[in-house]
Amino acid sequence: MRIPDAAPGAKVLAFGHYQPATVVTNDDLAKTIDTNDEWIQSRVGIKERRIAGPAESLEDMATQAGGKALAASGLSADDIDLVIVATCTLETQIPNAAAVVAHRLGINSPGAFDVNAACAGFCYALATASAAVRGGAARHVLVIGAEKLSQWIDWTDRSTAVIFADGAGAAVVGPTDEPAIGPVVWGSSGDRSEAIIIHDRNDSLHQEGQTVFRWATTALHPVAKEACDRAGIDPSQLAAFVPHQANLRIIEAIARKLGAENAVIARDIVTAGNTSAASIPLALSRMIERGEVRSGDLALLIGFGAGLTYAAQVIEVP
Ligand code: UT7
Image 1 (cartoon, rainbow, N blue to C red):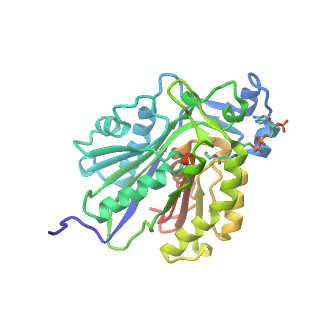
Image 2: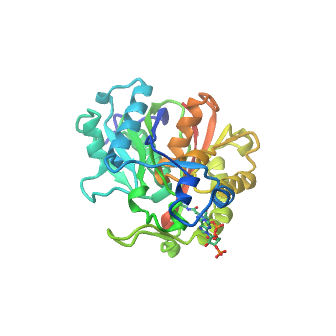
Image 3: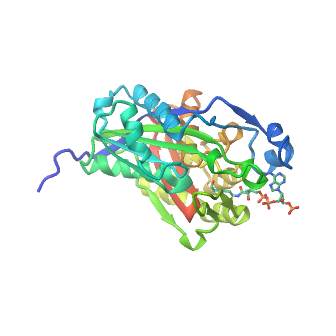
């Protein structure tokens, strides 16, 4: 047996992102629920977030982000042979988002599936795309993280309504001689699967905030460090640290414990809120757009969330 299309390595060729137009500030939320700007900014770090309108679907946002990543990659729809959408907020159980988005982008007959690893989903999907390219199962993969959390939130529950938001980010992954997506470090802690949960289709998202906070600030910096070790780099070599945008205090705690002293730290949560599987590609795409990171820079990604799931890998910025 031989594997004709296997590649020595995989790399991200381009990122793209999309955010809905409607900006919802903390003061806007304080008009309808018992909260205030000071509490939200000091406890979570969010100033404002984007929320999709009722007519704007998760697939719409994913298509926008995916189309931008595809255009930035210089490839055409015909070059893509696998589409993966990381999401945990799709409203339709079937069909999956990936097939719908692929069709809308004019990608002809790709492999298409969704990944649900909640807020860790993009890193799981990126690792899967990298493995598919290296293993010869795909040549070019469109990986999208997209969420419409607003349709799964109880807007009268102040403990979640102030945190979660909508958006999408995407990456195109392709083959390369020199690996530019490092080994993934992933895992889960199903004993705490009740900590973030939507029980059924009539329910909304519940979160044991402090349980998750304690876990995120104590268990994840070793995962981040291991991702650096497995990529053969020291955290001081990182130019960017792009963790899931859950809480500014969590982001800063992991960065401090990791010791990535030369890295620009993604703080996209301030204006984008927590967009779950979309938050990492959204944050990094916006950092690239603002010129905060350059092509060839090393960036550490780490996603974490419901499950509890986590995944981390080092990548070269395209
Ligand atoms: O994305 C997936 C992964 N998720 C995470 O990583 C989330 C991790 N957890 C967190 O980020 C934080 O736990 C939260 C931001 C969710 C909550 O912050 P906290 O500092 O843990 O607050 P808390 O839940 O302990 O609540 C403290 C107080 C409570 O009042 P009392 O009982 O002390 O009187 C809450 O009722 O703050 C109150 N509170 C609020 N007050 C104003 C809760 N939500 C709000 C609010 N506005 N929106």
